[in-house]
Length: 136
Image (cartoon, rainbow, N blue to C red; front, top):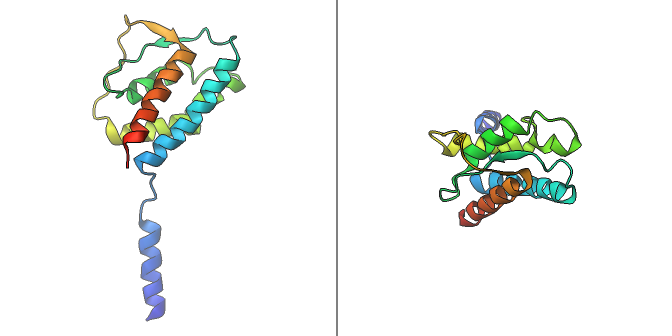
């Protein structure tokens, strides 16, 4: 009887999805963005990458940010762009967060203002921290 109960418990535990909650995801995104912001603030060279300015609609910019980073940064080579590869933690977590929260994602308008990568990352970091502080 103990063996059967142990087997049932094992199956139940192993089949339960082990997902990060939003607070953990946002915390990991903050950590990765902090690293990227520090890396790009130290180096002026390479900061000439421009991305479309985020539409700050109540800091619901994660989907736009993910699209912009995928389109303009994740394909670039070099160690400083490693954070932005789609198989790395920052981009994976942005994608996970967006899968949970974004029903429709409008791409950024092409005619919209552009800002430097460093400024883009700072704005995104501010929004992530704001959302993080509101989560329980």
